[in-house]
Length: 113
Length: 114
Image (cartoon, rainbow over all chains, first blue to last red; front, side, top):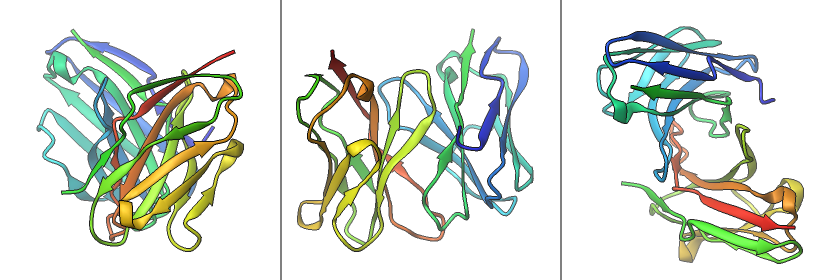
């Protein structure tokens, strides 16, 4: 247990659905991250938030929309996804965005039908 | 752009064998280096990290890694693996800048036969 929790752990959705992934960190960290982990590909950084402000968006399609209401919570809102978006979505946190040791949650396994 | 190469996709060893997993990165400046491990069904965990100082870094569970700046490498080693070391291992690099973004390798799956 790293102090970073994610819900749901598994999600199956159709291409027209809207769903949200939730991440919560109990470590008092100021930075939070979303990553995408696909089979046989490196982890891809999607979004970085520092003190609730987005500081990085790695050219992620607009069908992924992050939200960071406070330093402990991070959401990833999903709409009109494609089957190729099926992957494991990982949340991570670190003390701040300049301190690089990141602590990961267990991930949400997303399947888009 | 920074990149991280892990040369072995899948390594199969018997218990008590020695392990070395390769990791090379492409970035000319100051780097911070990490190895993460993902056991089956579990989340990514930090195994060890190098920021500065002694280039031979010791991590948890008997793992160590050596930073060789001239070779842009950060190979992971363990003298004697156990069945419980079966997992996927990820090397990651950061330039230590204000955003602290990690660039990950594709991972190496280690299977240890009992």
